[in-house]
Image 1: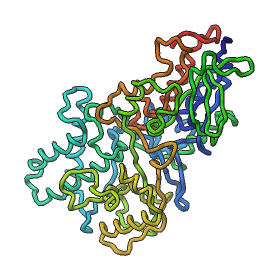
Image 2 (image 1 turned 90 degrees about the vertical axis):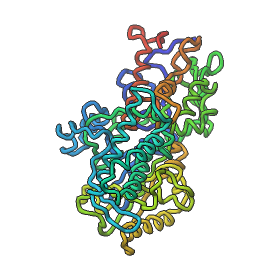
Image 3 (image 1 turned 180 degrees about the vertical axis):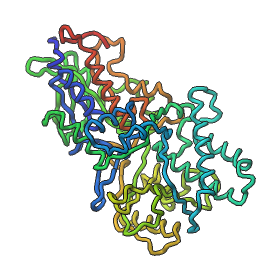
Image 4 (image 1 turned 45 degrees about the horizontal axis):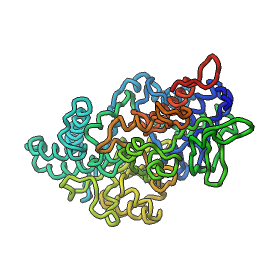
Length: 507
């Protein structure tokens, strides 16, 4: 069998999100010439997707740079490309540590049409954040008392709240209802149906970086555009969904122009591509749905079990544009508190009838000079998946009625609506990864393990795995995705000996 040099090796990357783009950039910089990206859709960016609501730029997918400081590769790229404003890049902003939760100025509205002041609600937020902080400590200390974050937070809230608010018992019920809203908010943060599905012991593995979360003034896709400009124009093959990656493909593999290849990539349209190496960057949701057919031979059992154990959920956005604001001028987030939800739960009893109750509230797009009067609503879980099945008119009607109920203003009418539908996107199947009950960082490592496995007699490093689910920093989805793409590119670089440029036996 002829040996391929590093320069001649055929490398295909499945998926043109930031992970795949990052891997391609690094491989090309290291002298690999035959690098191609196969993308199922007509666009680059994956779950980075910028859209428009009227004249306003809005983020359908990734929203913030979480932890924008020098340790964050996404932030460094954004600074290099000059995509951020001076405030976001300032040393002061980089030094602020928000622990993964942005510091927003809130307005609180209740289902009886009341607007509550911070003196009533701020103690609840502080109380809840302390419980969340405690729930992260079991990752290092062990001995978690309950299986999930949701069970722990609810049990501790019910145990401690009577003593915490004994001097203001008249507000206990509304404060318990606020905890429900905050639990639903955490479902959005984690991308899960319920915090009862998020493993308590693994929750603390999320490591956040310092920096005040920031956004791209001209849209997150600007980062993708700049990265793509550094790649050859013909590197991406668009509109080519992959049906199956055949690795260890017969004894000698497909023969192309006298060269033998161990991998054959079969697309849905019947096209095939021969490869030495494939980097798979598809979302975990897609892997979960197609784990039995995407690779042949199929994935080893331990990788399959890790895919099954890890969580992947939906977090959707509902953008609304208004003629005039109903919120305070300095307001940055609006919380909706159902006064009858005093029993702690972060799911609804009837999804079809009550899905709107999972909508926790809205962030206000700032600055007003750029966005006008636009809100971004947040909803997670099966309630968001059901919302995706409704018509735009039905969603607008439900959200309008919700806002009229909570503000007590029967004339509030959003003039435009735009929503995400990540669960029904056939190549995403949801939003992002979380650590589910029963899984750990070892499952992440299992996902990242290349095929064939170590110790195999087969040609090494045929199929490599990247994407946010394969990196331990996936709390920041974009950050983890980019790092994982770089990691797999570097794995291939180190696979080749610098002296001869031919295959090394090193893994």
